[in-house]
Image 1 (tube, rainbow, N blue to C red):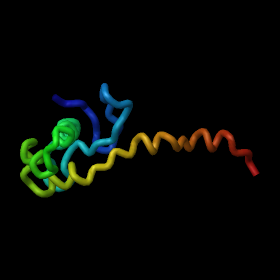
Image 2 (image 1 turned 45 degrees about the vertical axis):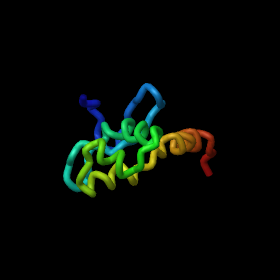
Image 3 (image 1 turned 90 degrees about the vertical axis):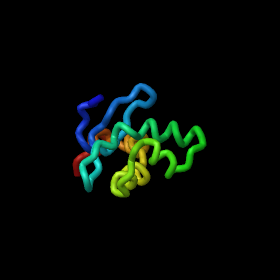
Image 4 (image 1 turned 30 degrees about the vertical axis):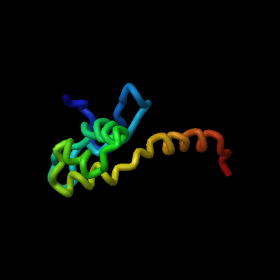
Length: 92
């Protein structure tokens, strides 16, 4: 299932408002962006990181790196709206 999301763009998901997920592995190009939610569910079930990645079929270490090192920062980034700051600032 393709979401039509470009790498580094904001994807909409029913359980969250927005999240930024790398769609493809930066090294080999394999699609890994669709694995994130399943990976989180496997971790909640008590699987180790390695077992979860094995179950997802991520065998190459470059693809495993993409999932293991992803940090979902969109919620923190949404707190900083640069346009509001600019509108409130008075010209010198």
